[in-house]
Amino acid sequence: MTPATRLGQNQYGKAETRVVRVTRDGTTHHVRDLNVSVALSGDMEAVHRSGDNAAVLTTDTTKNTVFALAREHGIASPEDFGLLLARHFVAGQPTIHRARIRIEEYAWERIPTPGEAAHSFVRAGGGTRTAQITFDGRRAEILSGLTGVTVLNTTDSEFHGYLKDRYTTLPETTDRVLATDVTAVWRHAHDGTGAAGAAPDWDAAHAAARAYLLDAFATTYSYSLQQTLFAMGSRVIEELPGVEEIRLSLPNKHHFLVDLEPFGLANEGPDGAVYFAADRPYGLIEATVLRDGAEQRVPVDLTAPWPGGPA
Ligand SMILES: O=c1[nH]c(=O)c2[nH]c(=O)[nH]c2[nH]1
Image (cartoon, rainbow, N blue to C red):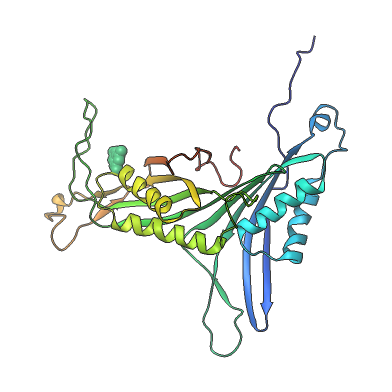
């Protein structure tokens, strides 16, 4: 006898649609360059059980919709565009009950050029902006974030006083390099219903959060990366009243002093030092910082490939 089966969590949609929207303002052009992943769920029992596709809005259509809405409405910000798409899918089809839109944005900076034309850009470094918008027909959950923002302090970092057992060899230090690749995701109080007030200016809010994260990294005298993480997250919560929680994933990009004694050289002195930038393994420090009373809803595992990780 075939065992009875039950359909568990399921979602589908087109992943990683690369859409570039150029807006022309006379000879001054603007670019928004996104990677958009759509995941829909709803009345999908029949398609899984019998291949009855009647409830299925095709992944091909979801890809086309990304392009069409970018043309019709423009891309004001990843958050605005994600909300527009999510609402479109849920409002447009009775069989679609929930839409999750994940977006990466690649920033372009202007190349200053003589003369009138402003249509030349260079891909900006400094990481990738991320957003995830989930809409269930009533409320939206709006997450903003960034990934791949590499930062380094050459001093003001100590690490000592930790547990020691028979396998501990790490020397204590009162001065080390502290470096990490910041991945952060923060959740907004704004849920698209108006209950938490008007939507923020998403671009300005993102720039502010990024600046607070960097400033807290730079200005925290650190006794551990955990402490630095908490300071970074707290700064965003304290400064941005519209942010309920923030999760950070910080790989500790170890920089080890090189032993130069075999060459008769003393490493580390008032004039500096030479470090070996280790690639792996790396410590991985992760935590969520919450506003008092807020629920923890940002997914725990941010380092699952984004987009594409589990919901
Ligand atoms: O800031 C740090 N936190 C740790 O937990 C840790 N563990 C380690 O080996 N080095 C470090 N550094």
